[in-house]
Length: 379
Ligand SMILES: NC(=O)c1ccc[n+]([C@@H]2O[C@H](COP(=O)([O-])OP(=O)(O)OC[C@H]3O[C@@H](n4cnc5c(N)ncnc54)[C@H](O)[C@@H]3O)[C@@H](O)[C@H]2O)c1
Image (tube, rainbow, N blue to C red; front, side, top):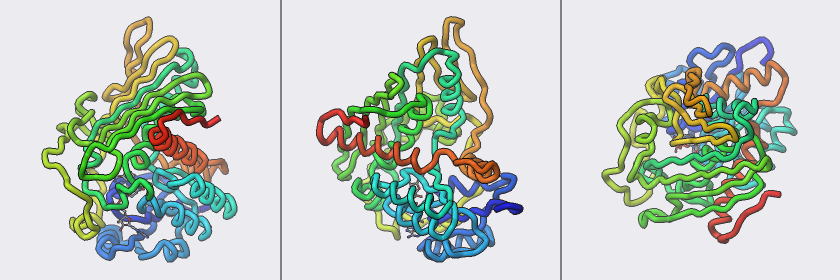
């Protein structure tokens, strides 16, 4: 990309692309270059809105000229296949979490990126949320002593949203452990700044309409001696935004969402994508001006405790409580800026495929620990 903008295409023009497309607005040195989807309606919507080329297969997109990187937002079970095709096409890969759905898939993706001299980044990383980065920096400076414990909990209606069968099929990378777990595992790994060495977890399937997990809890141990607790409940009876000034995952204040009507099953693609606007996502309005709250996250260190405030962090220590304001959430611009800068500075991009592999390993460990009713070790 020497001498020109980083030209990024998006593969998969569904719900997640709504979060990525607004990010292209005004990033110096980065621009949207093309879209790709198997659905005609999505391609037509994208072409009409952006006036850019659209492709109907990942192979055609990967072979297209004037594209430097492809952001993959296709379903989880296609991440590996698509990333390998993109890497072989000589284009950098930003792949939505989870990077792959098995460790073997992650290994193949990492190898394809290495062999073709391109970056493989994990996209949609909560590691870029300003409060998470700031807690991570506080731990790294040692200002409050060593990290003791982090907890992060989220209650929402994940299981009550429109879902295709594959999104709820754990074997295909569906269900909340593989769809939402990576966010919470990224949060605690980023803050603690150490390797996960073991865990004990419990998952539950308590919605009779769906043969997939609706909740999990896990205790994690880290190499540096810290511990973490992650808890997720997606049944839709309670919204943990209520514990965070009604601020949601995109920093917007809104009334907590409750699922008044229960879904009774999965949707067919025709139903899920019935909304004609799906292929032409809005460029604004998704992100609010508060900090993003992926539920509630509290960090405990030897000499203080830290939690999120609406605009930054609250730090509690022997001097009382002080607030650290933080810069505006960059949203998904963060991954684009990181890839741009890694290319300019000729360094690795973060979070890379290895990071995504480790996060997936913990998520798979949660499933395994619960199924076998044992600790899982990563020593
Ligand atoms: N929904 C969210 O809020 C959200 C947020 C962050 C990350 N993600 C991640 O984004 C990815 C997609 O999830 P989603 O919720 O957008 O799903 P979605 O079903 O809304 O969108 C997926 C899109 O991929 C397209 N597609 C399917 N097969 C394809 C193929 N072979 N080639 C090209 N396009 C293809 C579909 O037609 C659809 O438009 C997942 O990995 C998910 O974990 C989702």
